[in-house]
Structure formats: C-alpha cells, structure tokens
Length: 369
Ligand SMILES: *Cc1c(COP(=O)(O)O)cnc(C)c1O
Image 1 (cartoon, rainbow, N blue to C red):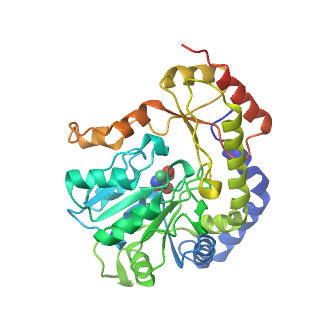
Image 2 (cartoon, rainbow, N blue to C red):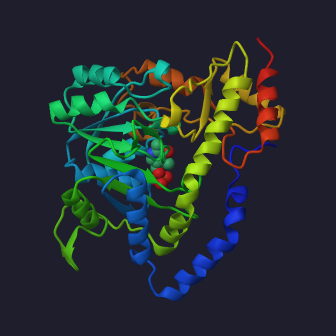
Image 3 (cartoon, helix red, strand yellow):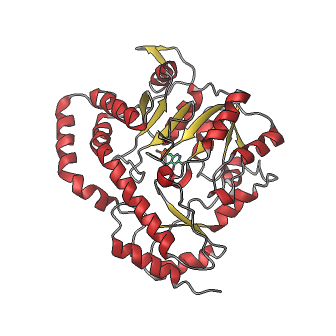
C-alpha cells in the first residue's frame, strides 16, 4: 500500500541527531519554556520574517490565544471558513465567542475570498476578527482581505498550520495578518515528535500578551493578571527538535511541490478536477487534494490499486453534531460541495518517484461511469 503519510520514513534520517538532542535536553535540567524554546522562537520568527514568535502547546491553542491576543472575548463573533476540520471553530468556542461561517470558493481551491467574506458579513454583520486559513498549503488571497479588515476595524488571524513557508511577494505565511497560528503536529510541513504550536505577530505588545496568556495570564509568578490565561506551553524537547528540522523545511517543501506538479502533469481523467498550481512558492503542498463528483468510487478504486487516500474534510463545521442542529438552516453550498468531492492523494517529501508514478497510473485507470 502506498501510504497517505509515512512519518517513520521522514524521521529515519534524523534519528541519530534527534537522539543526541534528546540526551542533551534530558541532562539539561530545563524541560518547559527554557532556552531551547527561546532559540526556536527566534529562529522560526526570523525564518517567517515576522518579529515575534511565541511557542505554545499545539495549533488549536495557537488559534485560541491569537484570537484572545487580538481582542476576541465572550460574545464576539469570529468569521471563518467551515471546511477546516473545526480547528478555527474550536478555538472560537474556547474564547466563548461565536463562529460566523463564511462560504468558500470552489473555484479558489476551497478557500475563503474577500467576496465570500463580504457575502457573509452582509448576511450577519461585522465580526470582531476573521480567521484566514491557508488550506492545503495554499496561501489564500489574503492581501485584499487584510486591506478590507483594516478599513472595517476587523482583526485578521492567519491559520498557517498547513502552510509553513508558503510565500508571495517576498512575504511568508504568517506575515500578513495581525497574528498567525502555526501547528507543529507531526504530519505538518514542519512537525515535532509530539504536539507543538506557535503564534507569530509583528507587534511586541501583542507578543508580550501572548507570553502571559500561555502561562495562566501571569504578569508575575502567581499573579493572574489577564483574563483568558491558560496553560499552553511548548516544551524543550519539541522546541529543540523543531530547531534542528527548520533548516530542512525549504527542501521538504520543494519536494512536496515537485510531487504536486508531477501529479498535475500526469493525471489525465475527465472526472477528476486537479488543483491549479501556477502560484510559484505560494503553495507548499501540505496536501494534494483533487475533486470528483464520484469521490467514494474513486477512493475505493485507488484503495484496490494499493493507494491510500483520505478526505480533508468530510463534514463541514456548521454540520458538526456538537452544534446540536443550530446551523441546520444555514446553506453554504461551496463548503458542502467541497466536503462531498475532495480527496487527498499521498503527498509527503519521502514519497518515492516510483510511488508517485504508480498513484498517477492508478488515477488514470479509474473506470468512467
Ligand atoms: C492541524 C491544524 C490545526 C490544529 O493544529 P493542532 O496542533 O492539531 O491543534 C489548525 N488548523 C489547521 C488548518 C490544521 O491543519
């Protein structure tokens, strides 16, 4: 079976280096928010071209704390696209705020655009903040959204959990909004050997607030000054692993992009719609997602041909059972169509050329109905 992901292959060449780092950390006496975390924060901020990075426990916490740092509180509304597995919605609910669901543009690879955002705002009024998700590794058309949001007094939080390093016009994901959330879950383009996350911001005061929010809202030890404070710290082991992996990220992203390009060249089938990849480095191919009205049949065909696939994501946020039917009347045709039609093919740096060709051949052999 050609796997959708193979973390063992990814980590194997790093094994000796990571084991040496682990031994150093074990001997160091620093395990949480120590010098390794500070070193990684500085390196990652520099790599992204943003002044400040604040390490946190995971990507969902990063979204929640980013929202709190831009002023989202109880009762506020946060605009977000409903096709990103509830991450933004969960973070919004953790702020006691409410999601304002924005449809996505199926002609823009399932991303929010300024047009879909404005349609939602006309329907429901202005939100306090908007989460722009660079889904599947593709930088959203975020510049017009940022300009609109600045004029309307709406804060912009980027969700960069799938887009480490994506860049346009010399700016990387995370350098566009008021704050940006990253995840270092093991399968991400930059992944730890456990959970991890970071919030990036160009604003030193906001970074200082984030450093308080991640540690109980403390202004000083045992003085809980900020409402909404949490325990969401990054540990030394993960930070040191991430610091060692960061210099390889551009190479990993280049290999992901090359695989995606080969898929787009090689897959020829009238019932499969392929993503458009004419974006230079604005796409870091976190996932290779195609669309088909016959998605289930295609997945079964590929499985029989030895190709593992996955669906990112099958149920949009506004249809999730946790809302108890609250959004049943809300129709978001773009997001609902995406949920029915998207299918992800294997796309990770260690995928071999022969495996890429086998996936292409299997797709092209999908019998037409
Ligand atoms: C993975 C992911 C997150 C959440 O990250 P965790 O570290 O798993 O909490 C948030 N947003 C997007 C788009 C993601 O892919």
